[in-house]
Length: 317
Ligand SMILES: NC(=O)C[C@H](N)C(=O)O
Image (cartoon, rainbow, N blue to C red; front, top):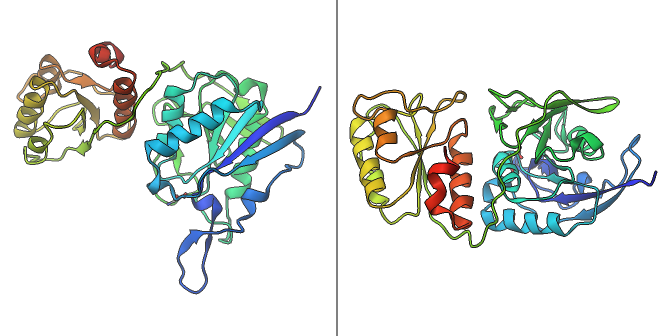
């Protein structure tokens, strides 16, 4: 059997950074060792390397995500490994999951520690990602995130810890597999996510977090927006003043998506007190099910970009 061809796409993040002794700051490293990896012991594959940009992931926008999507769609490789900063990794992974319609494995990885820190995890994460990308079992599973020897679906994974090596969690669904010395082993298959055929991504969609006593000050400023996502309380409830403002937005034609500020669980229209989820749903709010705010925002963005505003109630059913 011929060797698998893996495309590495390096985009930046801590996996390609180094701690500078003089300042103590962690910053991009031109000579970072990850970019030069073109062989993985024990993996029979050939590699192509692309480095379209080198940015920390807080600098990532949908423009870079679109550039990545194009590179992946153009490749003739058997699998793709993207290295990426961890702060927004789940967003790029989910964007690609929503918009790519290819069946080769696409695996995203990064590092929590830069290359010259003790216990640096970049190389081991890269190896684990390659083992996942060369596995026939990884095809048709949507975009996968591999961190800390664990395989997650882009749909469920989130960065749950700011600094731990085990920072990435898939709370309700759980990870879909693990990496061992022999390779990738899956114990579940993520449900297929709908693919959106996107056009322009020029939409303004802010994401707001709710809190006890939230008023209408911010929401009242958002009538010019193409959509608004609110991380509501619990199962999808808002304080009265915020709820009234959200309902005014809906009435003026702005789609409002309700996610939860809880780290796990789903939003549901349960409560009928003022601001309760049932009252929001009856007013036309869209419910994000188990998606967190940042992923609900990308789903709204890609749905609008694909010209499906009228179908939003079905897309967020
Ligand atoms: N661990 C990391 O990669 C964090 C970094 N700030 C980034 O997202 O680029």
